[in-house]
Image (cartoon, rainbow over all chains, first blue to last red; front, side, top):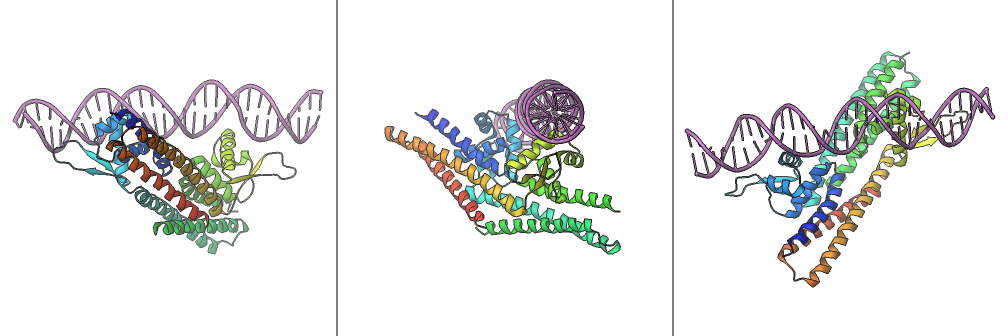
Amino acid sequence: MNTWKNEETTHKIMTELAKTVELFGLNPVEARLFSYLYLSGKPLTLDEMSEALGKSKTSMSTNIRSLSELNLVTRVWKKGVRKDLYEANSPLYKIFMDFYIKKWMDAANSQKKSLEEIQRLIERQQKKDEPSTDSDNITDRLKEIIGFHKELELLFKKAEGD
Amino acid sequence: MNTWKNEETTHKIMTELAKTVELFGLNPVEARLFSYLYLSGKPLTLDEMSEALGKSKTSMSTNIRSLSELNLVTRVWKKGVRKDLYEANSPLYKIFMDFYIKKWMDAANSQKKSLEEIQRLIERQQKKDEPSTDSDNITDRLKEIIGFHKELELLFKKAEGD
DNA sequence: TTTTTTGTACAGTTTAAACTGTACGTAAAA
DNA sequence: TTTTACGTACAGTTTAAACTGTACAAAAAA
């Protein structure tokens, strides 16, 4: 019986994977929770997660919900089991890309819209006032910033198509 | 004189740009500081930044240092000016991609190495013991995780080449 | 030289995030 | 039905991050 050895190994791998997962913007507990779930390779209960990570059941409940909303884990039913079961989605690359690209596209698009709205306001204002050199500087910058957002959208759109 | 109007506009744009900048992993003050610097379009002193963001000079000092280490801003000399001057680097897309890709590549590579080291340890162990079904499960997962890291490296390598 | 100015190290404080235990609503089991 | 088990809302606490004022070293100005 070398279960202790597997636990130790699992823990090591979990720690490394969690570091990468954190780069996607997940907090440390979410990252470790997902990693542990993925390594387990089977659905787990809140109590099992709580035990494994050494955190409260409440913490598991809230963090698993976050993961679920990001489509990184799925709730699963198993006949005869009363407790909620969750398992990690897969494959890793696909699920993280889907979530990450959506996150970026939504954000970049939202900010771009706001910026374009500001741009419209400035244009409308400049028709009334005489154009000032000072605000020209800002409109130039604004154009650049909007262009930046367009480039970001393009980048992620490209990544989206594998 | 419509300086107040420009200040208001600058502030609005700064807020939007900062939201995007935060996605790159910068904290809120770093993000706003960079955005303000970029919009100013000229080198600024710590006092000016402090005044503009309503934060202490100490805070500006530490945050501008972070931005500098990420190659997002540059210290600049101007004859006759005693105070330190910093200006935002450009163009936006390039400087953020450079920094972001490096961050991901370094991290992904580091974690991949650790994981491969764990993989070697397991292999060495399995030669001694008889192979157990239990650890086979883990080695499979481990392989997938390492593959995941390779895919991430590829993705960013591709993004690196514009 | 002495005085003044500037950036930042550090300590202490404030603010926000993370975390947990208790309590309760809901649903299964008895 | 009553009883038991479960997930989570909420309040209070702990922990960590963010922030600032003071003090001081370094360098410019006088």
